[in-house]
Amino acid sequence: MRTEDPTDPPRNPDSLPDSSDPSGPCPRCGRPSNFELRSYGDVTYHPTLMVSGRTGNERVPIERVVVLECSYCRQGIVVVEEERTGGIRGGNSGRITWHGIHWWPTPGSGTLGPEVSTAVAEAYAEGTRALSAAAPNGAVAMFRTAITYMVNDRGSAAAQARPDLKEKIKQMIVDGGPMASLGPWADHVRLYGNAGAHPDLFGDVSVDEAAEVGRLVATMIEMLYVLPATIAKRQAERKP
Ligand SMILES: [Zn+2]
Image 1 (cartoon, helix red, strand yellow):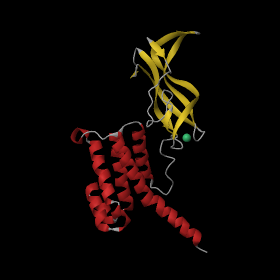
Image 2: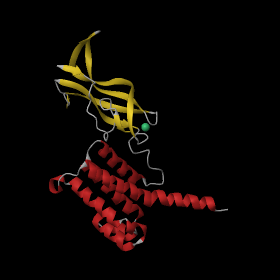
Image 3: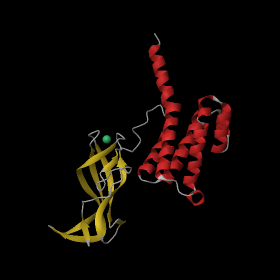
Image 4: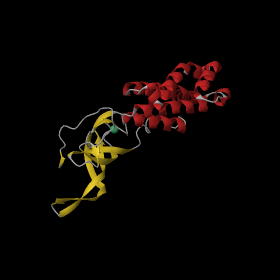
């Protein structure tokens, strides 16, 4: 039996919003928020299944697009959702719920400015998306990738020439300067990234641990890209 029951949906404040759980971080403004359903349209239908409706036999939608409005920034976001019956994609019985599989705007993309290297920003945004989808192993692996791009972008030629991230970070510390003070953090992220890529060897990374690693990476981006850009801007403004 297929039933649509919107009452008592499972809530997760860390996951991106969809119509079955209209709360979580806003992909546009990044704030924890609640969302209201503005409109929706069916996109993909079950290849064979039909149900009797008001106009005779009707196709059964399995994917749809919804517009949700953020109660914080008051702007709309677009979510592509898939239907799950009894919590299972293509399930036969139980409650029908809709789960987000794509979000627009791209979560995390609005939080970093043009001063941040594109490779670093994209890796960080992907880590943030994984974290939002409660995928901590994938998140820390992407945060580790963001660190690798940071060292390749801002590290010395000697650090860039090192074969792997462990050696790059060692070289960063030897080189001194602002990168050296970030060395221990970078190494912390590297170790978690390794664990995330090899949970069979190191055990799973928890969502809380991945969120902490994400905050470290955000602070490193702030120190290496955002603050220097702000300082340069202030200095330019002071020139007569
Ligand atoms: Zn918002």
